[in-house]
Length: 624
Image (tube, rainbow, N blue to C red; front, side, top):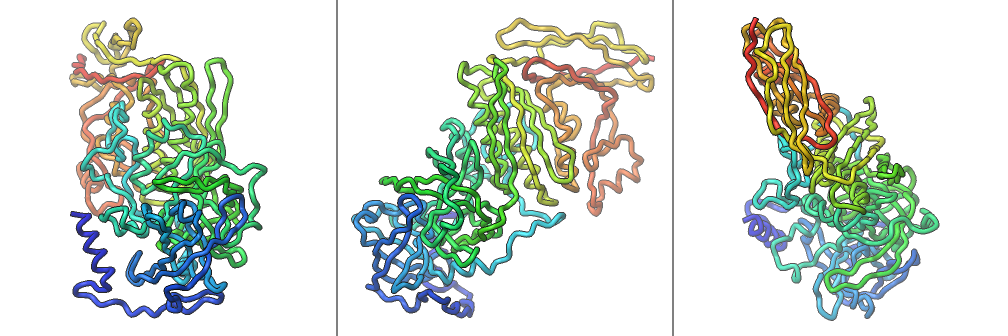
């Protein structure tokens, strides 16, 4: 149904009308000095397009204007149809990375090579975005994150089908594939992709700007394929990374030069390579189509050095090394990207320290783009790759992970995990992805995360235990005394072990029936926080929520009393007067509360060598 609707939208748009509406009276933009307006173009005009196919040298290639088509990427958005005349380029077909290559006729700038037919035969038909449409991007307001300004919600990222569960099970990554029909099965619509629903061979498509990924294994990329696909992003594993000798400086950037948008730099690198269309002083315009279609952004801009053009039946692409970050891409819109050479955007320092079994340490590091949609996935992918690099001697490993997040305005946020089993590494990455996504996609303000620092240790075996039996060793529970309890743990490929503890019975519990709880981190958090996570009123609440997270490397024991209360702004408030409770539950209250039914009277935790799962409860009748 959605495809049919998109096809109807395409037909109405190309026909130049919409039932029941009139076209807006928008005057064509005034001609720009040194450019040729679309109105002056005629079929048969000869010109050239300029790009770099090796190194940073800009070369020219001949083309011929075939005509102009209206309403291509949107109402009143034209596309200039040209044919490349150079035999080598006809053989290449559309080349990923050439987006933005400037097109000139009679020495005047016409626009940017931005679209092509993927499977055209014996010809290279290209689509050129008019330069007047691209220059409009420069007039758009830049990003100005303001504390307290709500940001649009997006589908929470997760390796488990692309959607973070409200209460994840202890193992959340048994399946990394998308769930058919799930509401999270969507992607960002980019540029001419709005014409989706027709055969790919008959559509003129935007030249792809796949994210070139280096330093990341195929195993890690496979785990994150669906996560990025749901954000309209394609990953392509390539050799390379940083250009040798530091790469070309900003002074080499001219129309036709290769350039890159950098999402992650360092030992792991992720970047999208395209071509610069126009430069005046420190201002630049490029691509001729969006990269992510995010609007106002703060995306690092770097130079690039082309190694070669790789020819492919499916898609040819520029293989390039990325140079230094030399500025900021501030606009990412329908007709192109724009930015400034000079100041660099704030990035997040990424470090992962991996300690081997022999005590040696390897450190992976880089700088991460701060973006609410993609940063969580990129950070989690860096963590997963850091874990996967340890798997050189055996497939059975247990990971001990301590993460520290340095967030402006808060003490360091420390998160700990212990994971084991066949999905241990993916489970750790998925858990961090959801935590980081919750932080970045809060409804209150944009956090500035200065640094992500991971300390990783591991054991070459699966250390997993679960609850097998529980027994009470002492007599009836009495006030002021201790209840002796023994529970047995079933351990993977090891003999069962016993744990003993004494539970103090409070004086105030005479005559009550309390509940003894023994469980893992997920079960304990469910008791603490209830089924809802919607009681946040600020970024501070979310940071505090994450700070109180529990570790799968421990057994949690609680003595609970049945008592109605509320959880407000992350705090438990048992036994409130009815009038106060009604006030908090009022829909007009700016700090709404959630009803709780149990209060923790006593709690302890018992560390275990690996990952623990299980849950047990039993009633405890307290005698005077």
